[in-house]
Each structure stands twice: as C-alpha cells, then as structure tokens.
Image (cartoon, each protein chain N blue to C red):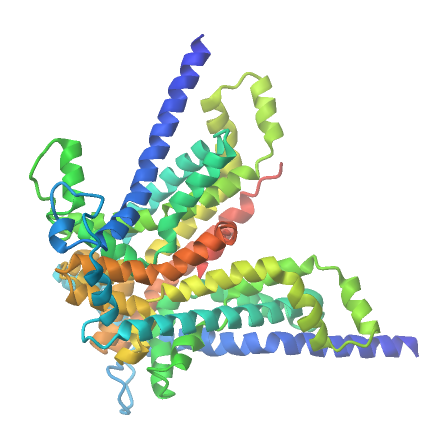
Length: 310
Length: 282
C-alpha cells in the first residue's frame, strides 16, 4: 500500500517537472531547432525572394558556388568574406587574449583593493555602451582631422600624415579591430581576474618559500594553473569575433568600402535580406554554423581534459 | 638593495601599462561626452580642446528631433526599453521555471531535455536569422513588438545558471511546503523564485543588455520608423548626419544614458555577471 502511494507521488512529481520544462522546450524547438534545420534545408534549394513559387532542389550548388575558386577574384565573394572574417578574428582575439591576461595579472598583483576595483570598472565601461555607439565614437576619432591621426602622428613624430583609417583596406580592418578590442578588453580582463582569484594563495606562498622569483612564478605556476581559463576565454573570444556585425555595418553605411570588412555575418545580411537570395544566405549560415560548432566542440574537449585539480 | 630596485622599476612599469590602458578605455567616452556639447568645427579642430567653450544645446535638440523633426527618437528609445525589459522578464521567468524543473524534479528524459537545451548554445543567432525572418514574415508579425521579442524569450545560458543555482537549494524546504498543502506552482512562485535574487539580477541585466545592443534582428523585422529600436536610430542618424558630429555624439550619449545609469547602480552584478558563459549567446 505504501509503495503504491509513493509511486503515485513520484508520478505526480514527474508530471510537474515535465510541465515546468515544457514551455522552454517548445520555445527552443520553434526558435532554434526548426530554424537551423530549415537553414540546412533551404541551402539545398534555390529560394530567392519570399515568393509563393515552389523553389527547386539544386543539391550542393549553393555550396559549390560559395567555394568556387574562379569567383575568388571578386572582392565581394564568399572567399573574401571568409578571409575578412579570419583576419578580423585573429587580429582581434590574439591582442585581446594576450593583453587581457597581462592586465589581469598586473591588476591582481596590486596591493590596493580600491585601485583594483577602480581599474576593473574603468576598463569595463566601454562594454556598457552598445556596439553602434562605440562605432559612432570611433568613426569621428578616425576622421582625417580627428584624434586618431593627431595622436598617432604625435606618437610617431610624423605631423600631418593622414592614416586613411576608414578608406585604406588594411587600415579599415585595423579600425574595426581597434573598436572591437576597445569594447571587449575590460570584459576579458575581468574573466581572467576571476580565473586568477581561483588559484589558492598557498601555492604562491610555497613557491616564494622555495625561492621562486616573480617571472618564474608566472611561467611555472600561474600560467599552467590558468590554462583552463586561457583555453576557455580564447575559444569564447574567437566565437564572439566570428559573430561580429554591428561595427562592420556602421562603417559600411557611413561610406567605408565594403570588401575589406565584408565578414560572413555581414555577407549573410546583404545576400539574404538586401538581395533576397535566401538559399545562398542559408548556405553561408550553415558554413558559419559548422565553423562555430567545431570551435565549441574543441573548447568542450580541451576544457574537459585540461581540468586542473589543486 | 638589488631586489628593491627591481621592485620600484616593476611598479613603475606596471602602473605605466595600467595607466596607458586606462587612457585608452576612458578617453573615447570622455570624447563622446565633451563633443556632444560642441560644434563640428570644434570637434575636428587640431589640437582637440577637451573642455567645451560653451554648452551647445542644439546638438541635443537635433538628436531628439531626429531626421524628420518628428521626435522619433523618443519612440525608438521607448521601443528599446519595452523590448529589453520584456525580454529580461520572460528570460527570468522561463529560465527559473525550467531550471527549477530540471534541478528538483525527476522525470523520464530529463537529462535529454537538459542536453538539448545546452545544445542550443551551439546555434548562434546569426546562423538562424534568415529562417527566423521567413517565419516572422509568414506570421505577419514584422514591425511589431511580438516580432522583435519572440526569438529571445529565454536563453539556454539562463536556464543553465538557474539550474546550477537551484541544485544546491535545500529540498527540505520544498517538502515542508508540500506537507503544508502548498501547490507545486505556489512553491515555485512563493519559495523558489524569491530565493533566486542574485541569479535573477545577473540574468535580467544580461538579457536587457543584449537586447539594448541588438541591431541585427531589428534591422530584419522593423522597417517602419515607429517600430525601430535605438541602435537602428543611432545607425540611421550617423548615416544621415555624418557631417554633424556634435549631434551624432549627443544622440550616442542620450542612447547610452539608460545603460550608464544601470551600470552605476548595479556595478556589482554587471561585473560579477561576466561569467564564463556570458558571450556564448547574444
């Protein structure tokens, strides 16, 4: 009799649990799983506009077109998008990673708690601004008569030189990297400070007793123990950079040339929404999805195997 | 003696690096604030004068009046507030409900459900925006709050956070409430939810921010001026008023005020909430 009653309670509990997770499952099915399957599906058809006409099956044509070598010469081809994305990602995430790690170590070693807090908040402030605001500020700084030229020329003692921040293809890429770096540096500094704080101080004490100096402590203790955070933050920064859109959009709508900053997300937007080539845009989305999924899986794998026990 | 020298030198180098970085992060913000009160001529003068000679009100009135003198700025900032607030609320409610269900109930397929939800973290919004756009056009909900909000009702990250937090919540409290005859939904609303305050704060800030900063989705679904959000306003304003830098900075400053105020009053949650998983989605 008692067992039966318990089982009844369990059943009731199970029903409630199921009920509680239902809304979210419904949401994810409709707004995550269905769209990603739909993207795969659409990428094999030649859907152009939102017309009622039934699109025909074209197999891998859209993908072949994306990776067609003969199209590589076109500055707006997917090839160049891929290149622009990789250049942007590497050029942004490497400085972000290295500098945020250095800054986090320097801040963590400060003795004054007030200075620590002040620096963290100040570095973080740009992250509070929206991407469009960040881009508008920097577009004025990068004006030929703006602060960008003034400062760089003062620093390099080359008065009156225009660096063509938003005109020259390479400088334009550098400009997007600077804007992105500026917005996210504080965020990554804080991630590393959190990671550093989780290393028990007793390990440092032991090292000091053993006569290790500061650089030895950093290379032999801090860095190896921080490895999980480093891996996590670097993959995260990479994923973040692969998704960049607003900065490039702002620069483009303000007259900067499109080709050097035609990153994949921006290309998807132009191809799918402006030019209404929905299938081509879907094929690009699938490529981006696979790229990001591989990175995420890599992250899971490395973080799992690299876990450190203190 | 040797060690002393090294220490002082190290300190100087440390502070030099930290201060250069401080200048780099803060000057553009100060630049925005002071140039919002200047004329274009003053902004692009060499060398730049950091303190405005006289407060140039006209920039702010231009920013608020907008391109067509129709004060659409106010409507657009209201839209952003409505969308961001709603998403923050639905995220908290749905994430806590789901997180509670996953943390405290045993049912068949629970782990599968959890894995599926975590799996959506691997689907970046940028890769599903085209199909979502097709769904929205089919449902005829372009240019509406529903269209702006629907794809962001809850985030997998939010559910993950809630679940982690609630796993440690003492089950005895829940059982005691059950013995007292409280209904399951009542337990969620009256016991679980009030006990999640720190996670709620972090999550709602996160959700609010990600929508406040969202440009891509509104670009797809809001074409009518009335339904545009503040990032769209800033981007259009910057495009049209490219030569009126003062007005552009005034608009940028006004659009940033809500976030600045939120940041200053809730700094702890902003910085503490920079959890490792934050940027996975959004």
